[in-house]
Length: 352
Image (cartoon, rainbow, N blue to C red; front, side, top):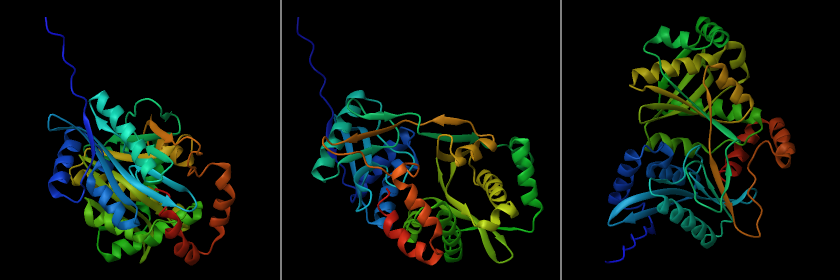
């Protein structure tokens, strides 16, 4: 009787993200496996074009078939250190595979690649990672909800207290525009930059937003008071879901209920575009943003993140709630907006 033969282990190699056929093959795999927009090669390309952080990717193959994929961004910062992240500037990512052997092999290959690139940390924002990883399941939650069948049903789906805020926004003299032209982009950036400065966070470079809008299915919804933009959000569309990804409001937005008007208008717009889900993204557990999304009736779902740090190094710290960054955040909130907007993109490129 012949002994059973060993099944070949998956082969791991670097993806050629400059080759259209390779990108097409990975795109098809991501779609089949139900991956996120942040798993797609075009996201990696947009991040590279918009921030200068190099795109990488690892594929697992067996008998000529693609069995696993790990998108990676090489992030470098004099303040926050170097890391491989999956995916860069994203809230999702990590390894996609149904094969446990491919998962383990891709995780190990990511660690080896990080060492070669002098990146002491690897951060996977979702998915499995195999052994030897620090797994976090309580730091962040995601919020996804089905869209209602019509405008009135969408309004009634919002809990009573939050619905009252939306109604106030609807009664105010506000205008909503949607587009991706230069006026939309400049209005969004002005609002978003002021919003994150007020939170003590450096703003991302405008080139990142431009690259995402030029590369992926995305648009900008802006709420105006007279001719002044007061709230704006850049949203991504993927696999039937809308993801309001980079959004915010100026100080006047609160009294005008402009943010409430903005998210309700986006729900209606997304349904008209054929979406069936509203993905409110991730938030730090028990943070203000976490509570805001719960007020809209979204149920939090814990996310699983994995981190590996090379022996002899400390884990990269980009947590805005850590004691190390509190004084920096307090200082940033006091910066004049023109200075924050000049310095912010230089620093934010390294957040990843």
